Length: 544
Image 1 (cartoon, rainbow, N blue to C red):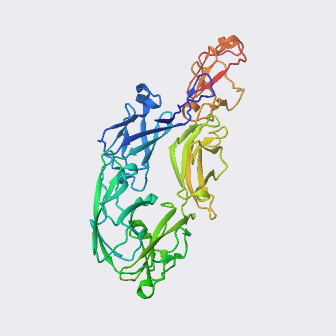
Image 2: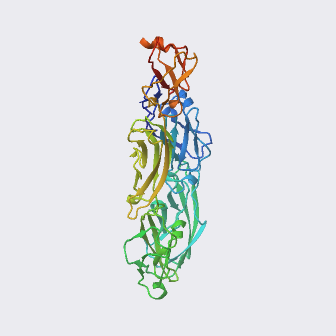
Image 3: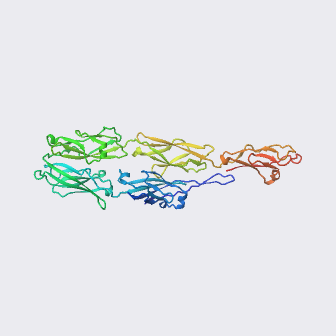
């Protein structure tokens, strides 16, 4: 689906002309956004969409203009056929590997169409297919439940995991038919759906010492896949009070990059029982994923949660940990409580500057507003810490203009250039964020100002006066003229000729000039009594 399209509109510029015509074609950058989708596991070479067609380009355009991908969110999963503009799969895409941390698998591609430059942003959504079955961490688990447990008691089980996402992940659990237990499902968001075993009928150890159950996890595919775990329940005697946490909700703010060992929060629970049945230990619930176990740890005796590894806000801004308080009874009772940890961003990432397109040379007659380079800036921080201001550190006839695309800037001319005054510019681009302790980075761009034929040749003297002795020899060189031109190369290469029109034509016919050196040669012998003075015009022309 095409999100938006824009076509390049060629600009126009005129050069200063002396005796000839030069046309300069300038360009301006445009951008477009396209969006496609493709299922994972499709074969390499599968077409995703025709970018050229969606942009309104024909094959003749592609012959003269190079189209390519310049950057991507991921390693090269896609490529563009430069001949027909088709975007195709470069290799088989495994969505679970490419987008392991994201529910929506969106691959952002930045493409350019050159001569003139166009920037297009293409987003490809990799659609999930149901290629994994749910599985439990263990094939069998054993629970010990006191016979004094009242109906309604809740035991959280280990959740099944399914690498697929969305509707293809675990959607429901079922429990084998029995008289004493039922299932309830708790939706934990990023942690998926958690099965909770609920006692619905009192247990009697003397009637049945154990119970055998099968829990089945089922995903949401059209042909659903499933996985089983065997639950063995041993019924024990009597510890009839579960721990109770002192707070209904635990929420805490934690700065990213807090030192290892920093205390996050201390939870507290009590148990009305006496002796070992009222003594508590704290732990992180086994339903929590391994990533959380790597980041946080809890003191089993005090309930103090502390940082185990450095926390990065840019990876995740909130964590929810299930904390478990368990007594030391023969048949221990447990209570779980959620602790929400909100990560506070600090300004720990400097902006990054990327020059996505650059014209290293620009003609001196370029109009103000001519694009020289496209600049993108990135800052991994958020809020003001991630808001970047881009500027030029020197007073130059260029300026940075923000683009419609967020964090994109165009380096453009802001006034007319004059190569004869400045033939090149070294510009330092500074990107600075707006955090409390701002971070910045710099990049230097060098631009050469190319010459155009905007200066006329000028004679060293005007008029020239010289003398010839009568009875001179024909073919003698009698004088030399000289002109200069402030331009360079061909624009400054001067040739000379004698103007032969009007009343001076007869006299000028007696003279000849070397077009390269300006040396004037007389073609006859002059007689003072017949001709005492004469004048003529020499024309100097550059080769622009």
